[in-house]
Amino acid sequence: MTKPILAVTMNPSVDISYPLEKLQLNSVNRVTDVTKTAGGKGLNVARVLHQLNSPVVASGVLGGTIGQFIEKKLDETNIKHNFMPINQESRNCIAILHDDMQQTEILETGPLLTEKDEANYLNHFENSLNGISVVTISGSLPKGLSTELYAKMIEIAAKKEIPVLLDSSGDPLKVSLSRKHKPFLIKPNQEEIAQLIAKPIHDLVELQEVLATNPLFQGVEWVVISLGADGALVKHNQEFFRLTIPKISVVNPVGSGDSTVAGLASAIATGADDVEIMKTGMTTGMLNTMEKQTGFINNDLFNEYYKKITLKKLN
Image (cartoon, rainbow, N blue to C red):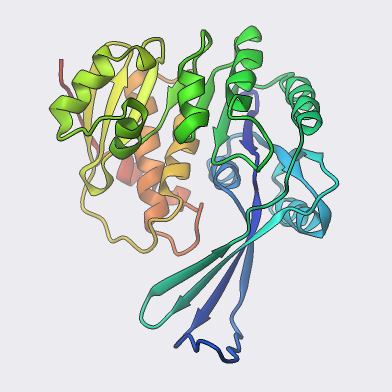
């Protein structure tokens, strides 16, 4: 049996959706159809892994009644979890869907943590790695934690020879790419790559050149760049691949990047070959866009859409 994947979310939330025909400012808005889900990029990853029948454990930090609600939601879907408790309240993230598909978001920043919390979580993380095949780290950091946290986690995992898939951006990603122990896989978009190198990138040829020559990306085994409806550009060691996906009916694209990470992690954990890893990640990302709920796929459609992905080696 495949060993579990550890899916880390450091700043999870309860995602609350309020659908309104019209948002009345400076007035009372009554909502009847409210949905509340365990949210956060890493929890989307965990959900999709569970739907793929890949063993997974959700991790990160949780606190207060909101943290208890998140654990209850995971328990309801039989997703195992091993969060470090904190003495602060986790956060709510509210999306108001109104006036013909407009979306207004109200996002709490979440808890303010300390150096001691960071040290405690690193110990918790190290103890969570026993029997783990792959680690995914997704999303932003709560306030108070250092931008070095992900790099420290990657170093701890590297000592146990556990690959880490890092889906983050900004300074936490840049610091992680600047250390001796680098993530096994990263999944930035073209804009995030441009931010890392502080220079604009105008096309895919220029993007390939940056990935091939910039020291930040040396030693990262996999770089997966999503191109939305145009598929993906993938660098595996020194080889480049272009993946193309079929035209699909998009219902909700939110969470498709997290679903891609889940597919990649699932394939890597089972020792799949390069082609299967890439095509699995693209398939799960596609399937998520076809569902109303974020971080969900219909696994019954997996084989059908897997076969529709084309792959071309670029060098």
